[in-house]
Image (cartoon, rainbow, N blue to C red; front, side, top):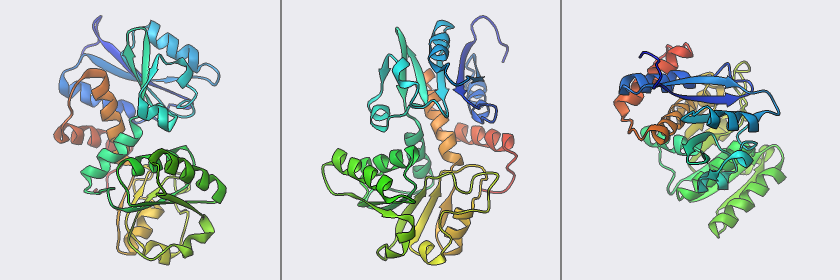
Length: 292
């Protein structure tokens, strides 16, 4: 595509942002769909996120992604916030509207779309969530919204997990979620669980680590989802598979949060054939050659 006076610009703001895989997704989609659009990263120093949002709007940018550490910090600078993003308390996509940007969270819809693509349902499942940070909280809200039968949050500090469980129960109006300290994992009732690993343990460069190592824990898991995407195959995933479960990484979540953002910006509908092309470009950018 030739950049000219009609080219629309989208991008991502973060600190750091140099490692982002998002240009591989969005520039592939634009090229394949014939959109006169280019996507670039913008490194925004700490303390300048408000100026970045105002500047992006003044420069007529079509839309922006927001990555760490600005997903919550960006909220006061938006004209409007989508209800899901408001509930989660974090925004990763800004869509240009009259008078300012509207904020969305496409991370959780992206995770759900990836899970559906992999044949993993949440409805009726007993869901284990490892971690109690912002991502784990969002996953718990998603699991409740998608009709999980039970949600158990495991975290190093039980109190932090309990606060999320209480919030989820308050949102749903029923006792759905509970909390355990990480060392209490052995007290989990027997059964088949869908486990979602929502910490950064096992992320590059510390790829040999997992939150829990005990094989007895993994024998209770029929499907494990690790939200870490680098490496593509984590220690958590390996332990799930060694105990006979299915395991998936965070790469498709990364793909689909980007696709949903692109659809919000352009109105396009991205089918799986096109998503597959963006997925392969993203894998090439990450130098991932192994089979899926």
